[in-house]
Image (cartoon, rainbow, N blue to C red; front, top):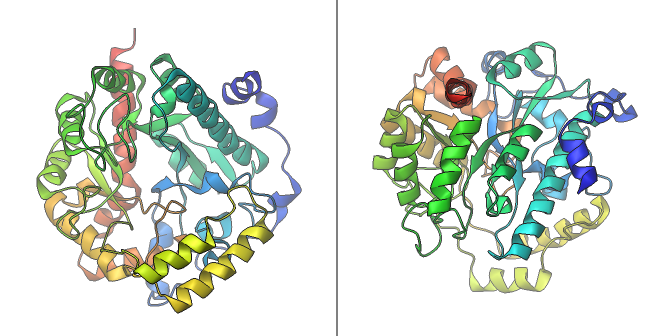
Length: 415
């Protein structure tokens, strides 16, 4: 624990250490090869936007032996969708790297284990950035994103997906804020001490009493409140009670696919009208239920090695590819993803939409396989008649406005 807090709360040696040899590896430059269906003119336009994605689950790979953010990986070989070369190829200037903790027991021991895991994950994010100081820099404010981008580096915000690790000690939220967390969601797939999940049976019918205190503390600190994964009641209460506009960092339109993880038109409209935004996910777009044969084959294959080497993961991926060939998965495609985005734009307008595709967390569709494919979104938005100003707002302007708004409220009430 002492090591974690030292690293998290200001180890100057870590944050300003010398560049590793990996920093010197060549990486793809924006504009080299546009993805299929994207003209050079659109790719140039796309590269001129300041772009971010609000939900990068990539930190789960940082401890994998033989895996590096500096190397270009192939999604079909190791399952990953984000690394620096592909970010540059896709014109992705930065985003929110996620501190994710899978929901567990609501006990003192469960909270302790979750706290330690989340602090370790936060450490891993900061260590990755510190190891490559000429390529990455931590971002703490909206202004940091443009400054870091202008310096030719990739900006890394931090976010919390599932606040279960906070336990019942809300002072830990301030600890995470001091590490650099600027966005947090209360719940994940299961209800917890703070409120109801969209994919669980309601017990609180919104926020719990502790959850209401969590919301107030997030506002006080200047942490942007994220309602993805939260129940409709929690979303409603967040819109009503948050002192700063909120965000849904990786959600979609329920009108496109009726799933509780998606938002209905009424909630999308309320979020947008209150000044918030919905970042479009690439999951929950169609019914992708596996056939009985595919389900049995996947169960026989087992889960990928969580802490395996790169070679072990690639070997597992080869076996999975054989299953996919014999029993093809049901996958959404790029058009379906854009249908979700365009519908949300129709309801919320270009000031109420952003991008959070859930990369490395289950995201990706046919035609939008990893972050190198992101210029396709710009191409489609231009084809649909959206202006450059609209597209810039969608790619980062709306999110940075919300980050700034959360921090402005915190500053206004600071003693």
